[in-house]
Image 1 (spheres, rainbow, N blue to C red):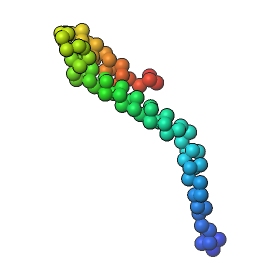
Image 2 (image 1 turned 135 degrees about the vertical axis):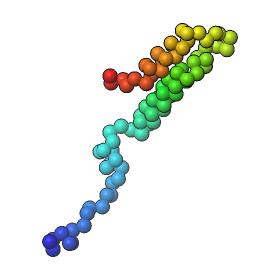
Image 3 (image 1 turned 120 degrees about the vertical axis):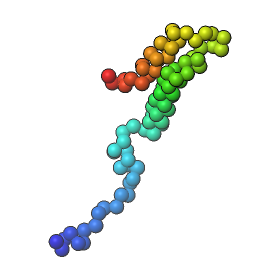
Image 4 (image 1 turned 30 degrees about the horizontal axis):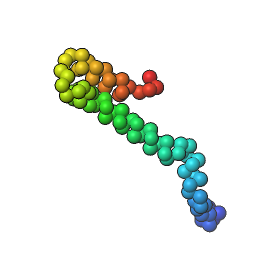
Length: 82
């Protein structure tokens, strides 16, 4: 055990290189993907909860708009890997 007492962990001198080794995607790409996913989820929720926002103010909200809203919400919430 005396050899372990004098051993110190090596300091992280290049933190950016360590981050790049663990995360291969650049920050701008991660940001764009996150914003896109957020906007798709928001559009799905709007279509599901308030489909009147999908049509012009003078159009009537009928069963077709409700069905479109439910379909749009389901399609936007689905994972692209399924």
